[in-house]
Length: 229
Length: 84
Picture 1 (spheres, chains in turn red, green):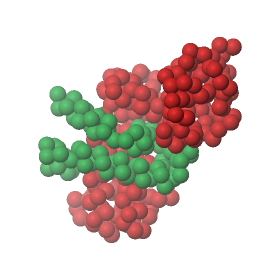
Picture 2 (spheres, chains in turn orange, blue):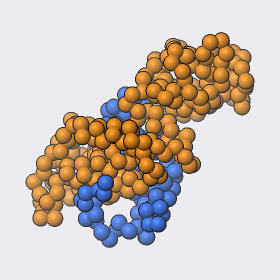
Picture 3 (tube, rainbow over the protein chains, first blue to last red):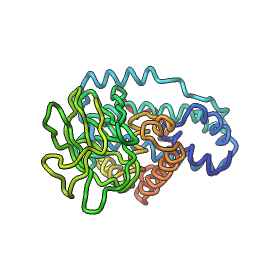
Picture 4 (cartoon, each protein chain N blue to C red):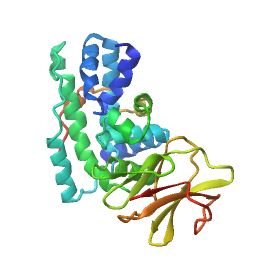
């Protein structure tokens, strides 16, 4: 494994997001490469400080139970390492599991309950995408999907060309015959991730049209694509 | 008080990251996704996820690594089991 690859995988490992197939290879490299090991230690410290990011309101009991159950059921992902020095008595796997996974399980509870503050929009999109009970709905007419949480909160993940100049994409939630506006976006970046401003009731259709900048009260063009939930 | 200050500091650093990098980190850390699960979920190539995650976390490390970083002097805290 080259050092560049090891650095990239180290970041994922520190965040507890490494794929199983990569774990053994990375651990083996870290055991023999001091430079990469130091880099990993620093990334791990940065990842661990994320536990402080969410506000700490008490999570709803049901959510807390679910998070703890999920944490208990977590796959065993510890690859034991022969300690190089007595100070390394903890294996890397143990350090990651203890410092990251457990803290993350608790942090997730806070996080899901934390929808205030500057990052609200972005966080909420992440919370929907992270919801294990969210459903994926395919788009008709474009690459991508609509992810709908049981609460009705929804996030569009779409691969669109940027909107024409002085035009914007506008989202609609259609239940019955009256489309409700659900936000606008420009698709400046490919692979846009957009949170809908309204909740999507079961069975509703989500559509996207091209409208004048700023958005309109009712759609004036044919949908570019739709999603039937 | 220290916890609150620390929270502000970490949030400040997070919000300084580009959206795509912040999202990759948040979904990995708070959402518990692996890299390949994330790639599938976001319809992005695995390589893109890997590089976003690394760039984001490396940037976060640099932003948090200021002179007053209380972690600099006491490395072993990492191996301490987290308070529950």
